[in-house]
Length: 113
Image (tube, rainbow, N blue to C red; front, side):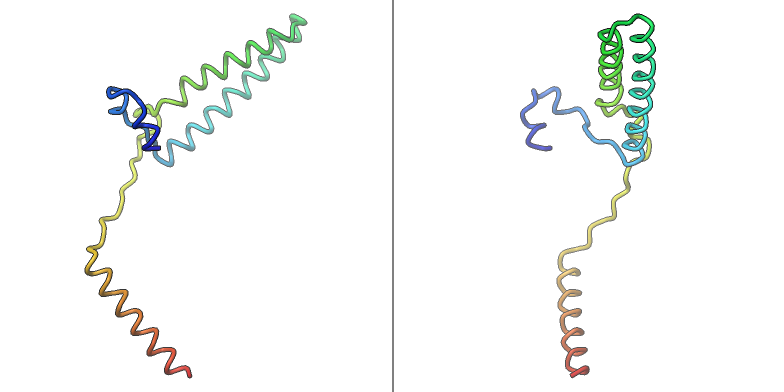
């Protein structure tokens, strides 16, 4: 994703391009509801006018409308619940604990033999 953002013009690179997990759920449900309703409405429009093209235009218009709503990461819709990441463990602490774990495993294997 960073490579794609690097190809954008400089002003667009400053825009945020992430959404949280709850935002993904909202986005998916939104597009499902809009496209389903558009399909039903498009069917009835096409049936009443006896024009398949009207039904297709209705569904395609709803797809464009849905894309305008879903694709931008709107902060008021898709970024309400930011992810709180854990703080990283210092590298020295991690390496010393992994060394201790290796020693413990060696002791356990010797005891079981």
